[in-house]
Image (cartoon, rainbow, N blue to C red; front, side, top):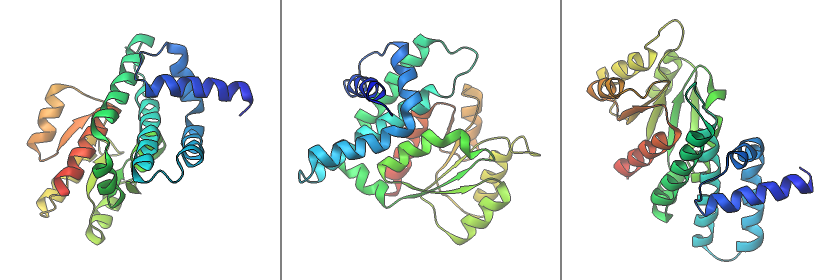
Length: 230
């Protein structure tokens, strides 16, 4: 990263932490430099906040979580996405972190392990980075069968699953039904392509905590699951 890139990054981060409405160009800058954000915040926090105690660590973690969650929110565009809607999604993500992340949640997250089931785990890198910055550890599975083997051996605080995994277009429900049938009540979240009310209702009727295609809402579900288990 050269000096011009760093200036752009700092400018975007400053606006992010102020929870301002971003111009579309700053969203692009954030996504472009998202892989560097975690290291940037870490080094900045260690340099300027060293010795300030847990409160300083919490603020640094909140900044890391915000950066990754905003990147997740604007990196899943669909046909209806516009620069304006992307900016709204970014602001929603920043507001969610500001409202939910505190010292107690960080302590709880540090002790939490989540199972993420998706045959394309690369699609969820930013979402995982947001939760990892909070302290959550992840175990990944790419199939229903692998997930069931893992849940038989290990307890998880929350399970996140996509919906379709070849050859099963409803693999998320298949996994959920098998877990509930075996008496496993681990909080279960569907993270898939639809946010339709009928799909949310069906997920809840089957025993899921919820269903969404929005990174900020997924984050809220995970926080709620951690609070339930605390």
